[in-house]
Image (cartoon, one colour):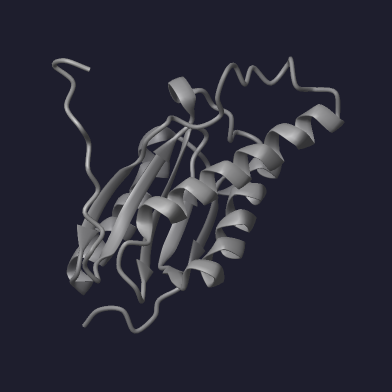
Length: 158
């Protein structure tokens, strides 16, 4: 389309990426624990298939943050596509089975079509991103009991 810029993700290097994906129109579709558990469950299922590691994750009411690393380049776009695709399907199907689909206000989509990825390759930057994830819940007023956080540190960076 004229005047439209093409967004590119450069994932051809061995970086870790701090990714953020938001619910469509910033709706609070992840307010309940069940959808949060699905998002984290799908994340953990996709990791081995893509040879990835998650270094931490936080699921907020309207978005999800996770630093992710892979042992191979060019993994991020496919990984994010599968994570968002499978998690949204499972969440929507779960609401349909409980006959709560219309009440949940899913609209046309569950996730925003794109995601934000910030590459990093040092431990201080990882710690900065993990602190951001922690402080994000404080700034938004989400209590720790309503927030699922998973942390795993590995031999990623020195």
